[in-house]
Picture 1: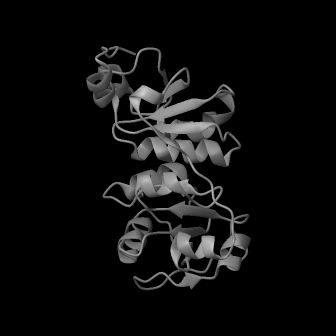
Picture 2: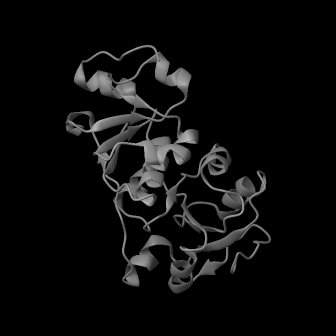
Length: 212
């Protein structure tokens, strides 16, 4: 596979916008920025995996190890942390990072996508897809919510109904990852619940359903 240079040390080399645009078709753009930033704008086809202590876990679940990774991050996020977490699970094919982050991409006139964050009051008639672990879902979920664990979603996107879908988890990080996977697979009518089931219950006054 073309390019896919291995990163040495703890610094990500900066790739120009044109090179990142070329690599989009060859590998995976992993956006490590917070959920709110990704929601407001991101590279089309990129996968949202916010940089936090469980970054490596979800990188392993959602992105194949033989796919060259292009990183998009905020300037305040530590590139050494990205590299360390990726390497500890055997992800060495990092093709560096987008020069000047999303701002550089926009300045070059490249397109961006959005995945909206919605509140309990604005879910409306959309289908709700809860992508938490089975035990979390059984402990309490929105009435009528469907359930697919995030780790299984990659293999089940084609099974998802073609209708507006709100993805949710405990806080939003996993849900945005799932929504980005669906958007990448050609399911653009997705959004993410800002918060989790308890916030929904507190704000609506409705009860959660318990059980599988």
